[in-house]
Length: 279
Image (cartoon, rainbow, N blue to C red; front, top):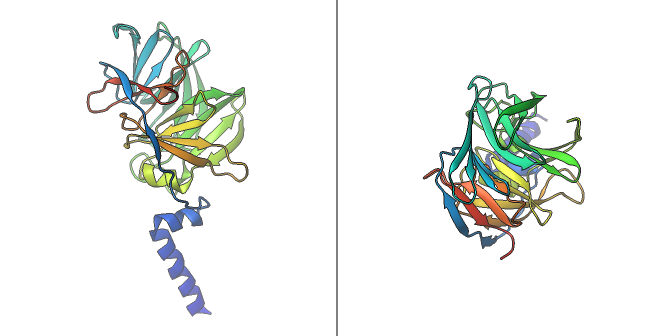
């Protein structure tokens, strides 16, 4: 009896040592990753001080850097407004998106633990802080937020090392759908093909594209993961991968120019305007 038990434990340990097998054990069965569908060209770049990501509106672009936001004129690149928050209160604004009449930002206490997440609302012109929505603890560190089909959507990152909260690791990164009162409605895990690319970090950026598909970016690799809600089960479908110049980090769709995605390159901190969908 004991020999059978030990043999089973040895098999489980061997499986967990292999990423694909470990993913299957944790409910995100491994499949072959989709081939690169295309390479998104960079059409324009803007000088900035961004360290986390970029956001975009019809006439403005925004550099996101933890507790600092800067608005630039989209046509000229000139700086128009700046906000610097209390570092103790806003240690890690990771991403922003222009939603209705607000600049809506995903903020956490990364790399501190336990992980705390909030959604911060700013005036898109003056960058004055308007309000906060506190999402509490227990899911991860929020990295992006978006509005789609009458609901709020947000990604909660988990990490293997710095900023992580054991026993959760990168495999516990979660997409959550909320109602207008920020009550949790549904949630999905990432498939093994994406987890293998973002490990040991997590998903840093994302949002719903003009084609109705969900696009995710990691922390380090210059690529976008095209996702779809599954027909069944609780794991997102990975349908394609697109190369881009931005080395992961937070991204944002330009709704005034469908198909254009804005991100940053950490090499120079420039904001990049990239054509992802369409010609």
